[in-house]
Each structure stands twice: as C-alpha cells, then as structure tokens.
Length: 446
Image (cartoon, rainbow, N blue to C red):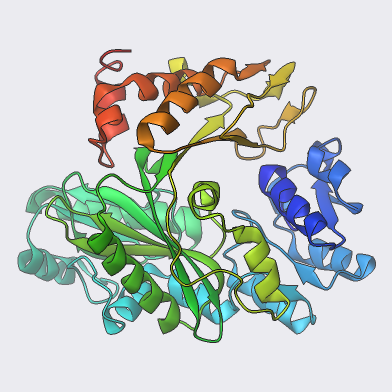
C-alpha cells in the first residue's frame, strides 16, 4: 500500500477480507499510525517530508523487492496518477492496481484529454483546440467562444493554474499568472482556454473498467460543495439528475473510459449547466476520496473491484447498477473555519466517531495520533445513508452532533451549518454555493 491515512486503512481492510496479505509503508511521522498497525508488514520509507517518503519511488520499490509484494495500490494523491510510477511498477514486474501508464498520461494532460473526449463523442466545453502558445492565439479563441472564459493549466489540478477572465483587458495578465503558477506547481506552464460556465454543478460518474472493453458506470455523485475548487461534501445521487440524464452521462463516461482502454476504477467529471447540458471536465485515473457514497447506494465495493481486476478477474458487478437510497459524505478536516480554514495540526486528544444504522466513518486516525503539517489535513470521512435524501440529511445532522474530535480544530461546524441551510436542504446547489455562504459571513437559518 503505497500511501497513508484513511485510504491505506481502507485498502488494507479490503485486502484482509479477500485473504490478501498487505505491506504498509510509513514515514517517520507516521510510525504509530493505524495503517501501520493493521498491515501484515510495515516498512519505514523515509523522513516526514513527502518527497523523501511517500513520493520517493526508488525507496518504495526497494520495499516492494524486500517484502516480495507482487502488487502496489497507490490509493489517491501522492503517486496515484503518476504515469512514471505505473511504468516503473510494470518494468519491475509488479502489478500497479490502477490504469496503465498510457491511460494516466493521456488523461493527465487536460488539453490532450479534452481532444480524446471530443473524438469519443463525449461533450466538451467549447474552447481551444489544445494548448494556446501566444496571446494572439488566446485572443482568437476568446473572440470565437466569447467572455467570460477560463484559463486552465494543462497539467495538474487542485485549483492551481486557473484564472477566470471576464473581459479582454484581463486576458494577458491571466495568461501570465496562470502559466507562472502552473510552472511552479506542476513543472509545466502550458495552458488551454474554455468557455466559463456561470454557476454550474459538478457532477461525476464513477466507472470501473476491466481493460478488456467492459465498463461499469455506477451512477453520479454531486460534488458541487467546494471551497477554492476543493471538494468539501459529496452525495449520491444528485437531485439535479433524472434517470434519462443519468443514462446519457453514464453512456458518455463509458465511452470516455473505452476511448483510452481504461482499467480499474476511475471518475469522469462533468460540469452540468442549468439547461441540462453537461460537459467533460477531467478524468481522475484513481479511486476517489468520495468513492464511499457510491458504494453505499450501489452495494459495490469499489476497492475490491480494483483488486479483482488487477488479479485478472472479471467485474463482479453489473454494467449498470440500480441506485438505492441516498448517501452523503462530509470531509472532516483538521482546519479552523474561524481562521480562513487554516490547517490545524496537533495531537488528537479525543476521537469518538458516531455510529448507528446508516453511518460509516472512514479514518486513519486514533486518539493520540498526530495530524501532521506534512500531509493532507483530513481526519475522517463521515458518511450517512438514508432511504431518501431527507433521511440521509437527518442522519448526518445526528452523526455530526455525536462526532467528538479534540486537540485540533475541525470543519465539523461548517458541515453542521450546511445541513441546516435551507438551500442545501432543497438541493439548490452549484460550485460557488459554499464560497457565497462564506463570503456572506454565514449560513441562513443556522
């Protein structure tokens, strides 16, 4: 398991249920972590900084050899979408539990991915044909698609290298700043341009492909509750997607996966406009943080499907699964909402997660563990299932009130406010929903 935290714990538990032995890696900062305790074997990979540990490919591969592991699950983040790491695994004769390096590479460069989707008849946002290389080329694209538009880094993600341009006078500055940020973040300053959709929804389709042409499309997740383009809360299904639209989006996602000969779990992310039009945004070539809500409404264990496919077995689920009930996931991060969501590292002095029917908590944290400043601030993923959306919301309200985390500040208060927000309760969402609430200084009705 070439990762840490809750996703390492998640994969280790799935392996144990399947009778597979597991090998954990850990940095000096993670010596006492839960994933280390749960694994059959554990090896120190390096010092706390990620580049010296969880991103250190030679050190990881040495542990693969030393332990005799015949597969590597990358989880999400770190090396999960690193085509070079997937290639190294292949060269060493070790199965990478994920797509092949070629698929990762094709979908990791956004301009190239967009062209691949266009050829596969997957709707894409009108924009440039590939990267733009000059201001004059960008101006020509802008005159064709109109303003507002958005300038995006061709490589990377996480909201970096992105600028919204409202009028022609802003274009040159936006290109310069986005390219500089993209180069600093990803080592690649190339950019492309798209029409900017005003207040769309972020809807993603979960796919699992066996690499032999069979693709399961497991419905949609609503991921519109975001802050600085980082997801905060997800749910399945979306109130904005009816069965006919779901079928069209699933079909488009399946074509997308087939176009790159995809293998393993992946997510096709779309923007959904108010008129019901949807457009390809990107493909995440890994298991998603929010995969659990899809599992709750489909009954499909996505991590086990990844492992089965890696072992050469066929999909054990149908290509279309009925969605039963409604599920919500709140990302509980060690951040201080009162201080602009500043990370709140420290020692967890109390950790008492909620329980009861329809409640699931995925976490790699125990009382006494450190939330390290070196890594992502996630403490837990709190999920609830209900027969319908109102029941899932009511259950989430109850679970959030029960969840006790002390020693660090968390985002639990923000989630509690979200669950009481009238517009959220009615499903009136878009990707700017949370930013508007925070800018206004709070939540109506909270």
